[in-house]
Length: 109
View 1 (spheres, rainbow, N blue to C red):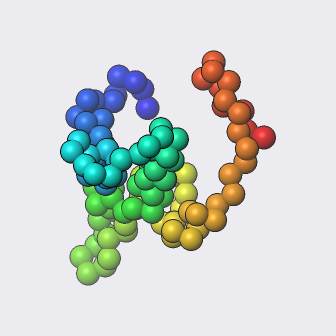
View 2 (view 1 turned 30 degrees about the horizontal axis):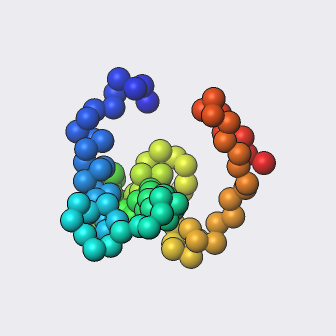
View 3 (view 1 turned 90 degrees about the vertical axis):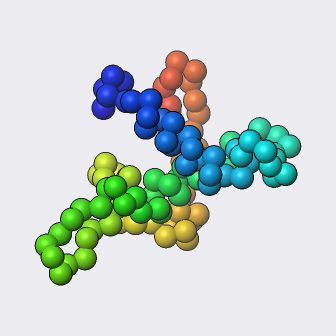
């Protein structure tokens, strides 16, 4: 995807979805994070859920009449995974330790 293909509407829609889903991001709330690390962790978990667990109706594949439509997540639409992840699968997934080089290079070990 080219940077020029990204439209402000999609970014603002995603921001709205995050604000509605994460109570820490609501403008007037009693739920807040005392440290940025917890807010970052919450946002990371939401992004994993949104991309791997949550079915997006706009990405649904229409099938013949009488058959069920094929439900997909954003990661399924991009070909990153072939199924909808369960919460157990998401939470038990082992991630390799990574170090970030601030030249925008991510090195996985």
